[in-house]
Amino acid sequence: MYRPLTFLFLSLLCIAGARAAEPVAIGQLYQINSPTLTEDRSYRVYLPASYRWAANRRYPVLYVLDGRTRFGHTATAVEALAAAGDIPEMIVVAIDSTEQRTRDFTPTNSEAIAGGGADKYRRFLSTELVPAIEQEYRANGYRVLAGHSLGGLFVLHVLSAEPSLFQAYVALAPTLDWDKQVAQRSLQKTFETDSTVKGFAFVARADDGGAALADFEAVADTFKNKAPPGLRWQAAAYPQETHASVPVPATVDALRSLYQGYRLSAADHAKGIANAEEHFSKVSRLVGTPLAVTEEALSGVAYAQLDAKPKDALKLFQRNLDANPNSADAHLGMAEALAKNGKWKDAAKEADRAVALSAEYQLPPTAQSYYKDKAARIKEGPKKKGAK
Image 1 (cartoon, rainbow, N blue to C red):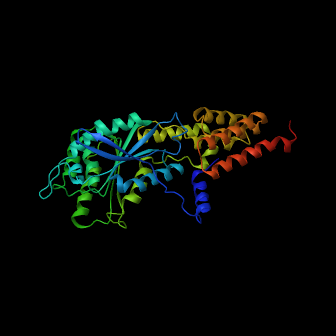
Image 2: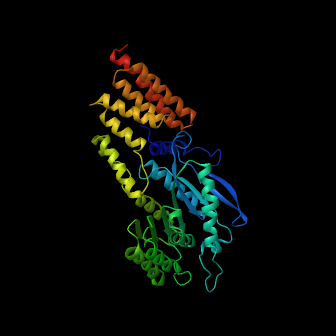
Image 3: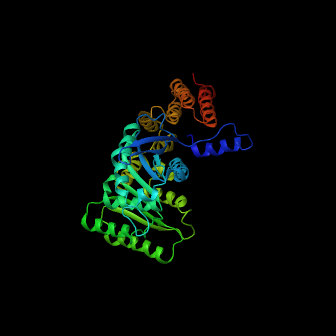
């Protein structure tokens, strides 16, 4: 089975001593004209590794505020966590801020600084950007909103004002002192008047002290004492981090907490497909959205049965291939299962298909070499076993 993180590491080793020939970029930069904001707004999009070949897959979307500064580490975290099996693959949409950041992210005016544009910015998201993203990309309707500092204040405002707009909210070191703790007061009012609020919320602080720490604890107490039963939440403290550094570790923790228990461990592969299905069904109920058995998990369960129950394993590999018809991994697994069942000609065809797909979708050179080597070994099988 091709492991993206392993081959990424090997690729980096191979090019460590080489000269850079061209810049490396993550995602693409786009613009949208907003009648609501009466201006053009830029946003960045990261697509999952499987997006090009898994044409039948749809993905959750993580919307990130302050895209210019938050896109890089967020997209990298999503990619690494998904490759490790901790979360599903996600589309990341990061909206760049302008000089009017304070206006856009604050729900009210303060005594010293003009603000109050948060509801207009929320309408921009709900009526313009989100529909545009869901029309253009294969989104599955599950949406996450993440923001830092004033962006975190905006996240909490949306949770209070229109909680159904997103299914998960991540507020990192939110500016909680704005307008005499308006975020805490609004949350409390929403929670007390609407018991149907559901989803997930993650609120993080850095090395706060004094009034800032008291404001955070007040918000945490509001979640603890007022949050409706359908709202899963976590308040996390990072006393070793500063206000500027906390988004990096907190983003990772928030995503892992959102998809708590998502990974099916290698030790569980031998427990069979029924166990795997129950595992992902349980996580689906926790997250509040359907989560199918992943390609990697299904493949792992199939490989665990390959030696002892080759016919049963073949059925599982076929199921994996049916769900992922353009996956080089799925074709290679099918090839190995066919070979194990003595169907060498069919195995060779599947192995060649894996090699062809790895080239067609321009997988890394190390990955393409991996599939070629595996295919060659499968084709050598009949000779070694004396088969025809």
